[in-house]
Amino acid sequence: MTDLAQFAATHGIRHFLFSFCDLFGVQRAKLVPSSAVAELAENGAGFAGFAAWLAMTPADPDVLALPDTVSLTVLPWQRKVAWVATDLQVEGVVLEQSPRRVLQRQIERAAARGLELRSGVEAEFFLMDPDADGIADRRDHQSKPCYDQLALMRHYPLIAELLEAMEQLGWRPYQADHEDANGQFEINWTYADALTTADRHAFFRVMAAALAEKHGARISFEPKPIAELTGNGAHLHCSLWDGTGRNLFHDPSGALGLSQLAYHFLGGLLAHAPALCAITNPVPGSYKRLGRSITSSGATWSPAWISYGSNNRTHMVRIPDSQRLELRLADGAANPYLLQAAVLAAGLDGIERQLDPGPRSDANTYTDPPSAEMARCLPASLAESQAAFRQDTVLRKALGESFCQAYEALVPLRPES
Ligand SMILES: [Mg+2]
Image 1 (cartoon, rainbow, N blue to C red):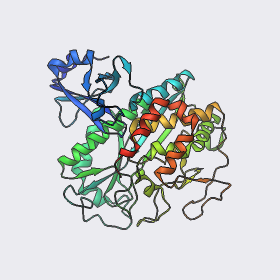
Image 2: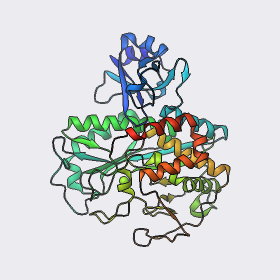
Image 3: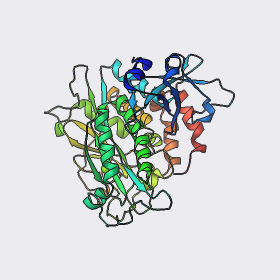
Image 4: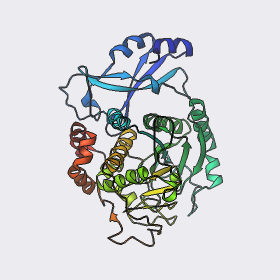
C-alpha cells in the first residue's frame, strides 16, 4: 500500500478524491486534504449510504471508504488532486453489495481455480451540445459517419487531451476514432487484469466527462441517446490467464485458435445471457439499442440474438482472433465493476459445468436471423432481463444474494435512460 501522505509530499498533491462507484455506476467521492489523508486512509472517509445508490436506509450507520492505493491516479487535468478507488465497510464489515467488492469476489473465485481474467473495454460515447438537444458538432451529419476524419479532427483538442492523459497514466492508449453514429467516438487503451480495467473504466467515465465539459461539450454514455443512430456499446474483450503469464484461451489446435476452456467460458456467457442483461444492459433505454431496428447508418452494431461467430460483429460474442472473446452485449449504462463481475461469474459457471456453446454461426444476423434451434432472442425489455435474473439461481449464488437483493431493490428507482 502506498503511503498517501508521503505520496502527497513527493508529488505535490493537495487533495485526494476518496471515490467509489455505486450500484448505478455513479462516482461518489469526498475530497480529503493531504494534511488529513494519513488519518482518513487509516479510518476511512464516512458516507451516508442512503445518499448514494447502495440500497441502504437513512438509519444505517456510516459507510467507511478505505482507499485501495493500487488504483491511485493523479488527475491529468488537475495535477494537485489524486483519485483513489475505495473499498467500503460498515462497522468493520465489508459492504458486500459494493460493486468493486462484487468484482473482487469473482476475481477471488477465479484465482482459487488458478485463473485470472484480463480484459479490455470499449467505452463508446457521444459528444452532445451542453445547452440544447442534439450532438455538439452540427456539421457531423454524414449518413455513414464512421471514421469521418474531418468530424474526428474538429474534436481534436478534446480527443488529443484524453489520449495524452491516458499515456501519462500508463494506460497505453493506441487509437481513437469517430464511431458509427453522428457525434459518437471511441478511444481504445490496452487491456489489463479485470480490476485494473474496471478502475480505469470508472475513472475514464469521469475523466472524459470532465474534459468534455472543459472543451464545451457534454458527454453521454447512454445506450441510445438518439433514436435513429447507433447506440453506445461497452464491448468487453476477455481472456483467462494462468499464474505464469500464459493465455489459457489460446490453443492453436482449437477452432479459430481458441482452447476448450475458452469455449466453455463462452458456453457460460450464452447460457446466462438473459440474466446477464440485467447487469450489462441495466436501463430501459438499453433495449432500444439491442432491438432489431435499423439505424440511419444501416446497422446497429449490437446483437439481437444469443449467438456467437468468428470475426463477425452481428453476434453477441465475436471471436476476433485466437487470443480472446469479445462480448458485444453491454452498453454504456453498465456499471464498470458489475459488468466484469457478471461476465466472470457466467464464464466460470461455463467452465465448471463444461458447457458447450454449440455451433458457431457465420451468418449476418441482421439480414439472416438465426432459426429458433440455432439461437434464442435476447430479452426485449428490462422487465424480461430482470425476470431472467430472478430465476438464474447459479448467477445469483455466484454474485451473492446480498448483492442481488440490493440491486433489485433499487430497480424501481432507476432513471429512465
Ligand atoms: Mg465501437
